Length: 218
Image 1 (cartoon, rainbow, N blue to C red):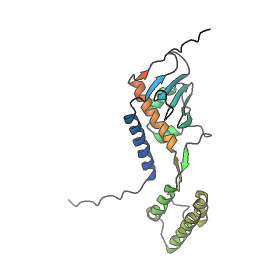
Image 2 (image 1 turned 180 degrees about the horizontal axis):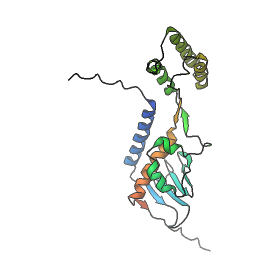
Image 3 (image 1 turned 120 degrees about the horizontal axis):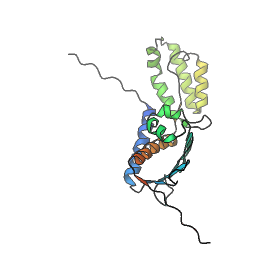
Image 4 (image 1 turned 120 degrees about the vertical axis):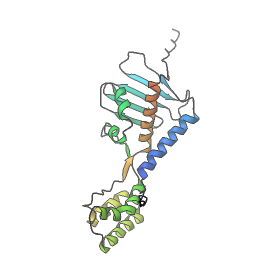
């Protein structure tokens, strides 16, 4: 049987960002066994609050707050909110591993994405092949316009200038290969990793119980 040539693996900065966040969070947990979940609410409370982190340390410390129809994560890695169901904990359990679906539940006024110049470089590396795969002819005019866009990008290094030059070229509008220069931010992805780990701890019963604060002497 004739062997098929190996498929070309295209560079994908999105996968690289995902893998980097997962690896860093995994290293944090492995190197910091004191990183734990502590319950800060009483059983039966409608609003539930947990602290995730190393005791008496604010480094990588986050709070997870579940209120009716709302889940919030805030702390050392910024803050974010998701809205979906009255009880958000079961929803997280089923949705947090789907990055795109879970991100749809973030209110529009909260930014969960960053610009990545690396995605522009990927577009330059792949645009010719993608155009041909879309069924479009590639001509010398495309080469010239592509170089004009690259010159604009390299001269100014501004994402807005890249999009302006891309749009004004009029050559790359119809292809299905749409240019997307944003992806989920490092801090947003870190919080989704935290939530996935948090749910694991919750389901495994590895949550430190609520401790009633000591009353001050009157």
